[in-house]
Length: 111
Length: 114
Image (cartoon, rainbow over all chains, first blue to last red; front, side, top):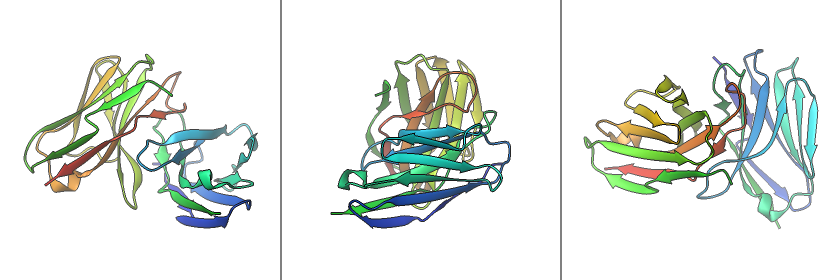
């Protein structure tokens, strides 16, 4: 089955700097890759997703890149703000099997 | 926000007692999921449903059962709770065709088993 590895587990950045979180997956049939943000006491919230037919997707300060050959995808947050502090999860699936999540990255943005 | 309500939001119970958690959606989505979240493990799928009375096991299904008698409700039951089932439980829903669709999560149920 699918296995998703996520790094780093914790990340601290200065406000205004960029943050990058990386994930690798094992199943070459995976074709859907969402990213979730989880704030304290809340459920995960979808922030961006990408499908295997594109290599990059942007939404304001966040972007996701996908390298199918290497089986890895990354979340990029630019101009970080204190409200970006949260736990971020990546996930992958093939469409025939449920999403498999990474173990999460705790991002702290220091003002 | 997607219309997902989990109940109860918090529960404390004793080992060996039965526990049922409820997930209710107002989106008429086909797929519903139950996850548990534990430190160091991220989100792990317990069971999911792809329609009324249609369910399948996830990664950590032992000790759990589910039922879906209506589109809007998905119940998770711990027949005889154990301390290892202390966790935060999340329900999620997704629509469209197939499992590769965005999932929307409820705000969770914090379950403590003493």
